[in-house]
Amino acid sequence: MGDYTKMWTELGLDLKGHDALLSVLGGAYTNIFLSQKNRPEGMKYFDFVMSEVHGLRIQELMDAKIQGRKVIGSYCVFVPEELILAVDGVSVGLCAGAEFNFEGAETMLPRNTCALIKSAFGFKLGQVCPYLEASDVVIGENTCDGKKKSYEMLAPLVKDLYVMDMPQMKSESGRTLLKEEYRKLIDKLEKVSGKKVTVESLQKGINIVNAKRDALRRLTELRAADPAPISGLDALLVNQVFFYDDPVRFTDSVNKLCDELEDRVKKGIGIFPKGTTRVIVSGCPMAVPNWKLPMLIESVNAVIVGEESCVGERGARWITELKGKTVDDLLDTITERYFNIDCAIFTPNPSRLAYIKEMSKKLKADGVIHYSLQFCQPYIMESGPVEKNLEKSGIPTILLETDYSEQDAGQLKTRIEAFVERLHKK
Ligand code: BJ8
Image (tube, rainbow, N blue to C red):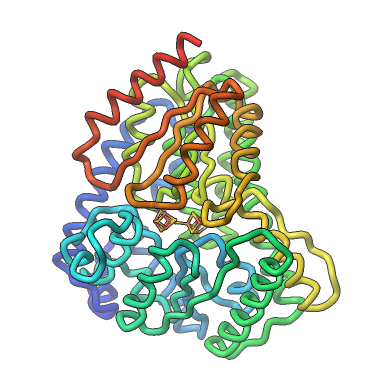
């Protein structure tokens, strides 16, 4: 990586803390990703993106700002990138996956807050996230109680925080509320950018995001092969980069990777031998650099073949239908698409369970590892019924609860080993 000290200083980063974060991140990346054997060549692009995730990509954001484009940060897959692109904005994901400055975060938040929220505050208070510092607007959403209340505390810390309300039930009034919130979000984006959302600009945004999701769908389908042509770690990385990279370049890189994986599938080349135990990870999102669980799973002779998560299928699986002649028509189709997302904040939430079953079948998984972040009420509450129902349907399931620390790694590994052993004997 080049020398970006000037840019980081201008962004107001704490250089000492930032250096410490980058060195931990770089070391972890080398140990976890670069040590894998027989990786697809196409992963080189994603290695490069990660090596420049606080460098070149931030430089691109700063260049976009000079050209008059706005950088819009968000924490949830309910924020439509299509709307941001329709005002020529740049969308960046801000969820954080590292245990950084939790002491600082705990001066503002209760200790029993999930690691994802604490991490976002730790990064902000420690001034180490160039994406957050480059954001002209940060969009929050009233999803879980933890996020909803934490935005009250985040507001005075960032330049411009805009919070969307969110439905909690998949009812007609819920759908109307979501559409209304998207309409208000358009107003906000138009005001900040000084650009109007038009039919053409919205269609263009929809096409760009659909192409990105189509590429990820291709990747998902290829993982049904045995041997799996790509590791779960690498597939997760692609899903994580989805939130940071230039969307058109990302799509192109995922499609190139898929071309290579198609060839691997034809030739029977896999990352692990044919017949390796296959699992699906379901639950909370895994933001960069939260790689602990997949790393443990794939270190015990199992391969992850799918992620039922917002950094995975839940974030990418629906396509926005391109129909209608007005902005309002297109807003209907966007609302339709996003209203499908089966986040555990919804009650009841039967489609999530149904989809885990569908995924298990499609991807020929031997079992499901349900992953909840400690103190995440929505996913922990949902995990019990999910486990019971999957087991009843003949899909072995294990519930794991963890955080971003390494302290429980040994214990988790033992439980995963025992579970993989159970799947092996099935
Ligand atoms: S659509 S999953 S990205 S809300 S882990 S902060 S739920 S206490 S992240 Fe999410 Fe949107 Fe839903 Fe997806 Fe709360 Fe749980 Fe923490 Fe979470």
